[in-house]
Each structure stands twice: as C-alpha cells, then as structure tokens.
Length: 215
Length: 215
Image 1 (cartoon, rainbow over the protein chains, first blue to last red):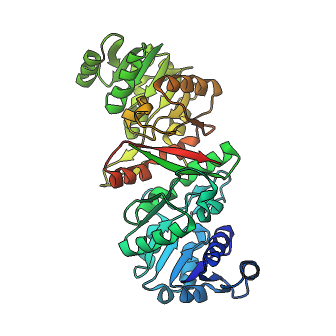
Image 2 (image 1 turned 90 degrees about the horizontal axis):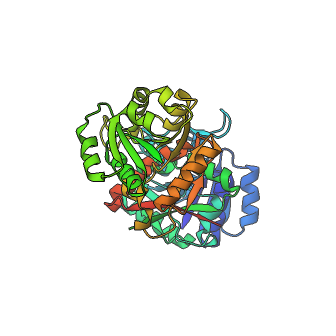
Image 3 (image 1 turned 45 degrees about the horizontal axis):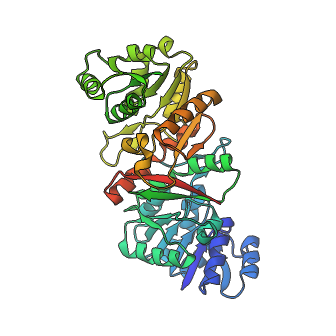
C-alpha cells in the first residue's frame, strides 16, 4: 500500500521504517520538500521510502499517519490539504503535549475535546482513527519486544477505517486491540499521557505499556 | 485502627465494610448524624461500625478516606474540619465526574490541577494520598476477585503516609502497587477516568482493571 507519513520525528521515523520493512511504499512529508531529517530517513529506510512536502505525502498515500507534534498537527494537516486527504484513512498518533510551562508537560486539549475530534471536525471527509499514542514509538511498531498481553487502543467514527487500521496494526505484531468506539475515545487515550509520563519518571524507562485485565 | 470514612455511597460502603471485616473500627461520616444510608451500613457491617457527621468521622479516625463524590469533596472536607484532619493521613478516592453536561461525563478539574492537589492545598497539615480511584469499588477492596497482575496507583507528598496506605492496601489483597511520586500524580490517575468509562461501555462490565507490563 502507498502510505503517507506526516512528521519527521521519532514517531514518524519508527512507523515509516516499519511500513517500509513490511513492503509498503512510504512517503514522509514535512514543511519543506528537502527536509534534512526526511532525506536522512529515506537513505536509512531504503527501497520504498521517499520524501516530500506534507501535501505531497497526503496526496501520495492511500492511508495517512499524523506523526506531527500534537500542538502543531492542525496546522500541519492544513498544509497537507483537505483535498489530498479527502476520503482517506488518517491514523492520528499525536499527543498535544505542551512543554512551555515546564515539566511535567500538560495537554493543550483534553476532557471536553481531543486532538482526534479536532482533526475529524476540521477534515470531515477524512476518516480519522486515533491509535498508537499510548506507548513509546519502539513499542508502537514492535509490540512483541515487550512480552505480555499489553494493548493498543483504537477509536474512530468509521467502522471500515477502524478495520483497515486494525488489520495494519496486526501486521506490526499487535494482538490485543481494544475498540473504544467513536473518535471521542481520543479523549480517553490522550488523557493517559499524564500518568504515562509519571510512570516513565518512576520506572526510568519507556519500555512499558498498559494491559487491561478483564474478568 | 480507628478509621473515618467520609461519604455514604458505594465506594464508602465498600471500603468501610472491608475495613470492618479486617477488624478495624470504622465511623462513616455524612452531612447529618442520622443519615439513613450510613445507619443502614452500620446495621449491615456490624460490630466495629458506627456513623456520625463528617466532623465526627474525621475526629474519630486515625486515618481517613475521602469517598465523597469528587465534585463535592472540598465542601465535605470543609465540614469535616481542618483541625479534625490535622496531621492525619487522608486517602483521596474521589473522581470529579460531572454528569451535568450529559454522557459521557467530563472532569471538573484535570490537566493543570487535580482533586488530590486541591485537597492537599486546602488542608496542608493533612497528608493526602491519592489511590484506588482507577477501578470499580468491588475491585478496590477485593482485587483477588479479578485474576492477574492488575495494579493500584499511589501518590502523595509524604513518604510515611504512602507507606501506611500501601500497607493497608496490601491487607485488601493488593500486590501490585505503583508509586507515582508526589500528589501531582493525582492528575495522572484522575485523567484515566475518561478511558475507563469508554472501556466500561465497550466491555459492558466494570470488572476490569489496568495492568502495567514492564520490560
């Protein structure tokens, strides 16, 4: 499948590299066509990897991943272009962490709204699925590296879009996927960030994840 | 130990009953001394159980549990009285769920503050420990009823107070306790409520809990 990755950070790198390894054709998009981090990723990821602007990547991909920093996602997606995203599945991996007020960071949106919902409202003809934003990027693409029944959450308004994303996540190695319902479930996943950050501090490691034990 | 329970709802009932079963002397406090729900609980819980006002219970207990609805907790604790709570450990189990704007509920405080922090600021000479607010009340007092390595979070500014609460929670059956650090960790635990509510909807059951898988 042709997939567009929006964002050149660790999350975009990890997901883009995994997708190339799985045989997909992946374009990494950023503000400029010649972004150094994107070009370095293309060199490292090899065959199937390419780079362009946000609009190039959004136009290229049949499925898109929002891997930009949550606080910049809406602006980045505007640059990607509504028409380029129309009718496509967009997996939103963003967390709206605001580090400007010191540590630990707070969220710029939560409780009565969420990034997933904001994106869905701004791009009503795109099928937004929120997922993967509750664990470190190494675990996102290689869940089997952490033994145990840990999970990934999925939510979105479009059932077919959720199935497509779920099927792709299974190829990453995810076995334990929890469907939280419509895109407002993004409030739930986004709001797990504060406790994640505190556990990161307590454990001094990012190599952990949530598991849900059910009776 | 003499323990004061503030609140007559399901959480106060569950914790109060468990504490009586464990041999503690427990007074349930409410707005009025003759609260029907508190008196019914005294009859059901039996020897060791008593009831009184918030102030009576706060004065009686060497350790206190805030089991009032989170949106009413600060008012209830004002009625309990600063002097009655002075120097004591208060376990805050509250969630500030606001159902007034429809379902699913939102939180009245989160992200840049939390109920645990609000209580600690309002009662600086009380040692506030936030715990138990991330699972159903049946699991709070009987974690072994759900097999598996699921966990309870603890946070607070006073290390001795956390140890006291941790020791008591172990007598409830808790084996997997995660210390999130100071009372600002209450932001983390409180903000798990939105995803809990969505999982409750997805599973149609309250019999589940978080486990943290660590590498």
